[in-house]
Image (cartoon, rainbow, N blue to C red; front, side, top):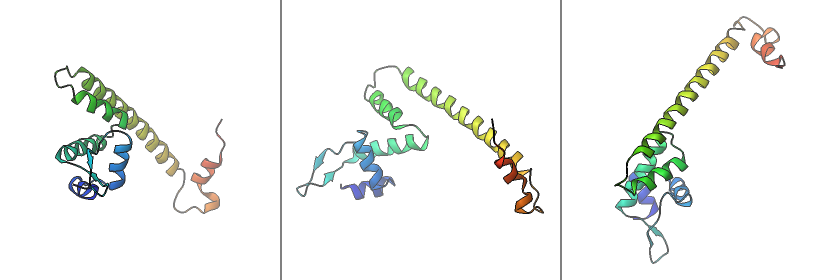
Length: 132
């Protein structure tokens, strides 16, 4: 199948497929007589794997590592578990950072009432104060 059909089957854009090829996460196995890349069902499975990993916000480096590990079915899965544990820690850290940001924005929002003019706006005044 050609890249357009692969994109339709997987719900992945042609640009993303080309990017994954450039990053060596996907390989086009052969070419048509017209020099078009041709893909098979294994590529569909691989692309779905990559897309699922991306939906979990795994980096391309992490996906590359998982692909390499997946090609060694007889080894233990300690490395896979460690990677996911590390990713969970990073997500928890980002959640904390986002909650802190939300609290700061709520405090900022509470510094101004709807009846103020722009000149009296507590948000703009707070943002104008230099932080040291």
